[in-house]
Length: 265
Image (cartoon, rainbow, N blue to C red; front, top):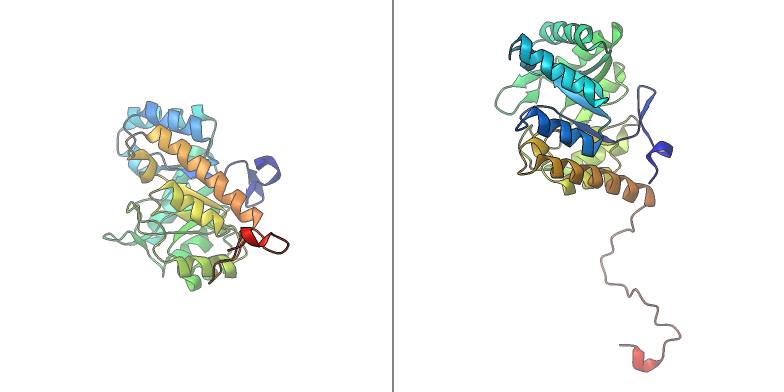
């Protein structure tokens, strides 16, 4: 599949890859750089709050590593629990990374890391009004996702499962319903653990996936990054090709009409 003829389009901007990659928890900066090199993601997510907590020197080195990859940076508001906290963090990230892109995370429960579904649309609406291109992290709740679209989000990032669990799509019905009902790009964010999970959601018609833990905590993060990149391409190709409909009864793959009787059974 030629990605130049089938790009991922977010807020009118085309991207050659349908894989977005997180940048935390890798064994070393060198491993992260190599994983980015082999997978060539559309964007790299980065948490301003987490990185600045590591000190000025470490933050500078990390931000320079991101620039050296040549991949667009998608700052996020990870760790924010209030509307104002998320907006302030987004504004700081815009200054540091010189971008209007923001992955909006507004956590409502620290145990499941489920987003605050009551404040999330309001935060998204406020950020859009001040010029941000908002990619909101959400659950697979249809009403929530539709509300995010209604306030101006041109893409939504529902989870497949709670962050870091690696369980894969735990509610296929809800996820497929989202894809059927919403006419904006959908990026699966959180819960994928295997390349087959990524392939599956792309087969369902999801537009992209965002990964971090599944790659960073693999025995070989570089090889796993490549595996996920291949899986995303395969899933997208399968979606475009159009899969056969599942059947309740067996059907012969070889026609029997006109076949000698001794070859029929």
